[in-house]
Image 1 (tube, rainbow, N blue to C red):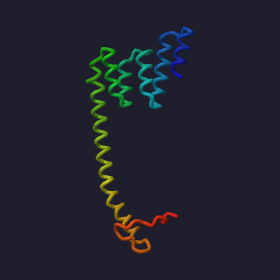
Image 2: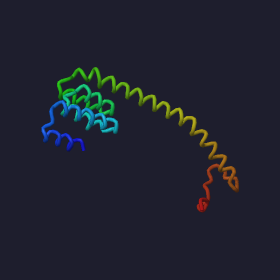
Image 3: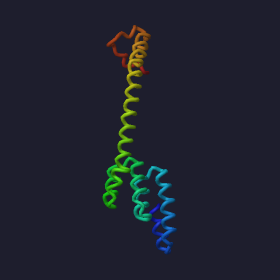
Image 4: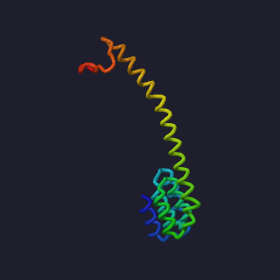
Length: 139
């Protein structure tokens, strides 16, 4: 894991630039794997890169943690420049996705009703509305 790797590098006395290079590399790998919290921690603890750490947390939609990290680092400016815009973009994306799903449901549900009615009518005995299938129908 990344903690062990960093500890081993520190234990053997690796220079700061080597530690930072390894931390940036591991953070990028973690970020690509969706481990935004761990990537952010590497960026803050080993690279002292609050800007990138906050951006990473926003990418993972960890907005509360991003705001907390910005405040801990006394970088309140990142709330306005990074967290707030990312939060607005995520909100917009969620609203668009919800609208798309609603439109799809508005199309699919009436069609599904028609198909179910047609299947019921095609069953022996007419399968009139309100009638349930016999208990052994699926056997």
